[in-house]
Image (cartoon, rainbow, N blue to C red; front, side, top):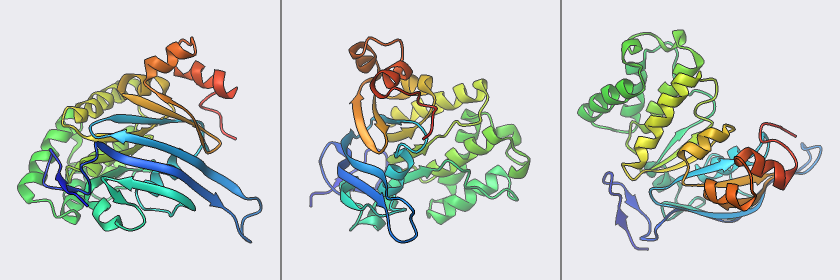
Length: 269
């Protein structure tokens, strides 16, 4: 397998292919004696994501977005199909993939008895990031997200939006070339959300590849180069936001989703 160096750091991709992520006929089926009814959480989806692209996964609760991300991050195994991250197979090369990715999950994965700087330093050390790099990135990220003044407060005193911002910084402290953001701005007020959008957008300028799940249509339209619309585990449309809006003669992506599924993105099962 050919090797190529990331433009952002010394991490090694497993292929010179321009795609950062390849998903091929991916399926995740929950079944067995402990499952009342077989559930096809992901049902044969295929797509690719270019290096340096912000790619959105849109769909209602239960559509398969988080399951797809969990497979790509190696948190769960697929039932069928293949997936490659940075040119590496998620089934065979998970340790190499972990060196390439940063993951910001839906629930804040920080220690509330530590303050912001202590949390960031702790996770930076886990990733073996050099101390001077941790310090530089910590101050820069806290400043960009407006958390610098609160950086010495314990995280347990933070609002939900502030915790999510800290969660985002923790995911980025190792300077990964591929970043998974699962509903990163849920619970943020409009001002904080806009600040976070600007921060996420700045990552694209560093040639980061970002996979974003969101229920906020305006977020996807503002940030994403392309979006994939998923419903009931199936990929039903993919393209640039404006391209899809024009294709379906819609005012926004929410209306696109309504036209092709008959329900709103914020609906669940």
